[in-house]
Image (cartoon, rainbow, N blue to C red):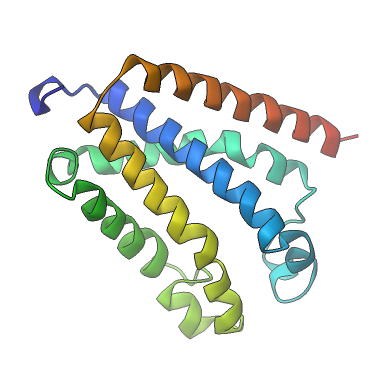
Length: 178
């Protein structure tokens, strides 16, 4: 698929599904590997994060559709800079890490602002990089290679994985509300 054949609907689906899939996978790994249950129940994180058994946390992966739309709308105007360029995945990853991780507009944990203005220890903030950096890297690689080698199989797999995420999040929502 060439640059001139890009359609926003396709771009939105690829960005959103790639984000949801990589967000879900890295989130599940992080919950267990970083012991988020305990971390989110103790200060200072307990003042900031909902417990992992919260209904909102359960439905969070489905709500990433909203972030997918925001990402797609923002990235749409810059797509030529990363979709069809050598090392485009690295350009996209650099953009995400620079603007979404390190340089947020507010003092989010792990951002430069968060390290300056919050009382959260820097070591606690850096811990989140173990989840966020691989997730944004996987997202960038998936989006880039999906455009480099578009196959119907990728579309089918993305529908299956997003459907699975929606179903699992629905089960989590129901379980958390009982």
